[in-house]
Image 1 (cartoon, helix red, strand yellow):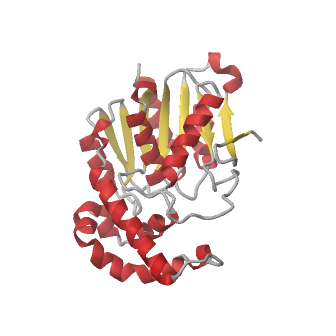
Image 2 (cartoon, rainbow, N blue to C red):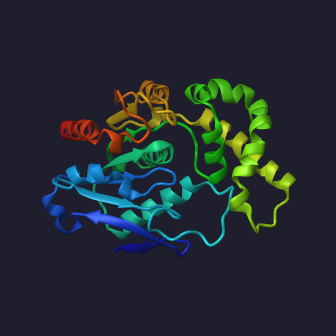
Length: 278
């Protein structure tokens, strides 16, 4: 299995499908998985796309077949490291042409968006699957978001930004319980941990307020699921409003894992969209 070593010395698993016949493909597609997932999540898409494209994917640090950190840093925002690791992987593979990028869920989709803003000259198109504008990139933020009821997720900025203190007062005990396994053996007091939780969630809300996907200029396909409780369709609709050069598709009878649940529909939308990009 192929691995490359990141700047911290960890071995990260990657796939470079059709890399050995790159001159015979119709372009490069980068796949970015979500939190607690791996590149294998896209197997339904890879099966179809590998016929015509070179596909590059990797398991982020601590995910899938990649190495796991020796020490857990609860406050470390993984999106910066994942972006850096992706940049290093592309350099490692000597990628010097434009590529399309597909991101799933809040983490993979957010990183895909940030790459498009940071390196617009490198991006041919963007495809967002069950994504949104929420900054989930560490354990604390992930647990917090998972504990939120659906109506808050649908209107995150309207509700959470205005009532964040009250929400945290009610939800912190559950976050502390959820973190019990993670902090076992760590030298951290309950008060210090509570301060860390508050700091992470307040900064998360502020980052969301400041984030503006309207900086994405490449052709963009946004696909949401009608039954997605994790990244509600309202998030896809909001991104569609902000990303001017975008197309929105909401799939009926599809939840957060639509690329696996409704792969035939998703794959058709993806291939039609890519084919339309000249």
